[in-house]
Amino acid sequence: MNILFLNGSPRKSGYTVGVMKCIEKGIDSQHSVEWIHSYDLDIKPCISCLNCRPNRECILSKDDGHNVWHKIRSADAIVIGSPTYFGNISGQLKILIDRNLTAFEEIAKSGLEMPIPLHNGKKAIMVTACNAPFPISQLPTQSKGTLQAIEIVFKAGGYNIIGSITLDGAASKNKIPLEIQEQAKILGTTLQS
Ligand SMILES: Cc1cc2nc3c(=O)[nH]c(=O)nc-3n(C[C@H](O)[C@H](O)[C@H](O)COP(=O)(O)O)c2cc1C
Image (cartoon, rainbow, N blue to C red; front, side):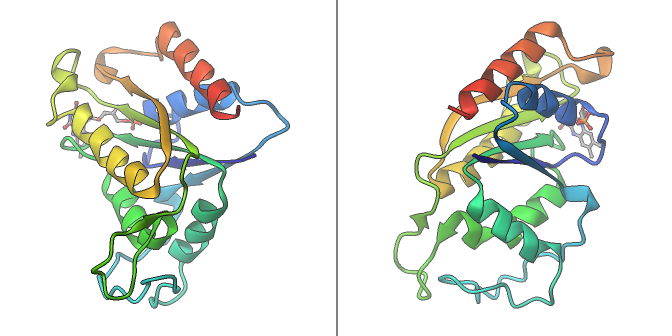
């Protein structure tokens, strides 16, 4: 299997990446794992020309957005992680996802027909980290909003969301709690099967 880890955090030693790495630990070495760190990429924002409908390349001049399109299309399973920023995903991850609309779903040129999900049944996991402590973290204005934003993308793609992990109260922690490490590793093992 080709498993794609899409990281929306600028902090490679932060909690989002930390939890995603725990998921990776649950994956056997026979599978290939690829990481995309959105903040390392040069991606111009989507200009809503919709030229990519139904299945054409983005008309913007070549940048990393085009490369990511192929990686999303060909991955057998996917993990998307983002820090919670104002109850949502990070800006750079949003740019990356918007630029890759047709990597997740196919839309007829007219835009009048229902979009067709391109990844029916593929497994997916959502991860977020936030500073708000439980139970405030569960509000739609906090980590729940972030997970909902990722869920919208996964649902559009037709993925089977097998789980999500929220690391809340990040500011008051100095490491990822053991139970979250374990939960993440188990999810990683489930992702590959
Ligand atoms: C621009 C910005 C907005 C943030 N908004 C929220 C928020 O709405 N709720 C929250 O609990 N934490 C918020 N935080 C805190 C981050 O979610 C927290 O620091 C998290 O651990 C970052 O993830 P990372 O460790 O992967 O970088 C915000 C941080 C930044 C920089």
